[in-house]
Length: 460
Image (cartoon, rainbow, N blue to C red; front, top):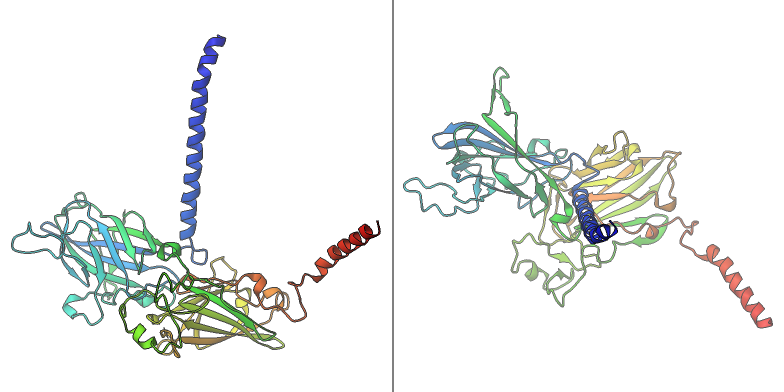
């Protein structure tokens, strides 16, 4: 019996080792999968997403006609120029016979067709919106905006984009049609991750007079969520701070959005006073959407400055300045999301629109700010006109208000949906009569101890 137990021990040890290895691999998988999920989760807009709705409206001899609508259900993140790009992979050998309101970027190989040539024969088509000014016979409702879609709060009437396509070789019944796979959304850049297409209850449509309701023959939805890390590896904005009670100006953290590296990357930034500035801006890549930023210590395309301006008996005042350091980008329909505990007592705002966000239920500490249409909703490219400003007037709450310990400065700031880099809290401007960064009181007992010890050693 002892021999049998001894001979089986190595096998038990090997099994235990395998189980341990599997447990470690499983733990790593769970950790990394949870990190990816957390990165895409936005606590200030927990339910925000882009939903792609695909409605089959009628059958054709070899397929169907569908209307595809891209809904932006994000509260403050919009799709800016150069607009959305939508892609997928067909489940079978489908082709696109024609499109209205959008087009594919490539036709693909249609050599097997005689006579009528499809609009696109690619297995994995890529679709873009048509530009404004498209002829009416090529338009449908909510199309032709160059792929630009507003955020849900900022402009709900323009928070959707639609196009129509006629699909062939696809099946002509609900049982033979197969939903596409591997949806991708670039808006712009690879910032969105899309789930699988799910068949849902057919969409219903009410006539203009409200007396008749029709419905789609078949509907499926795809949900896409945003991750700033996927969109770009470096941040796109930073925050600087100042106040009336302290001469210190806290600049954006150094290298917040990258560092100057003209040795290995010539032309990575442009000096604002360079005599060759115009030639650089109008040189190669003039129409590129890659940032060409002014050389700064932070190298961010956007800087948001929060200045505590005035102190009244019952109110206090803040000035916000947004500066564009990108020479190649006019930011259309920009917006700012600011988190500060005194937004529940915001009294007045000048030259910006305002909407309260309540991501945490009844707690009103988050505000969305954006420009007034035709006045300052366009943030111009870097230069004398590349900034917008506003002032906020807050009423003091005696139970919470203070200028001490950086309370008057924001907790978080987003620009057009991207989280901006904040200065470290210990660098905030402090009240003159406060010295939290002084080491004197803490260092004095230690100094006395060492001086006393040294004296004793001398006398000994």
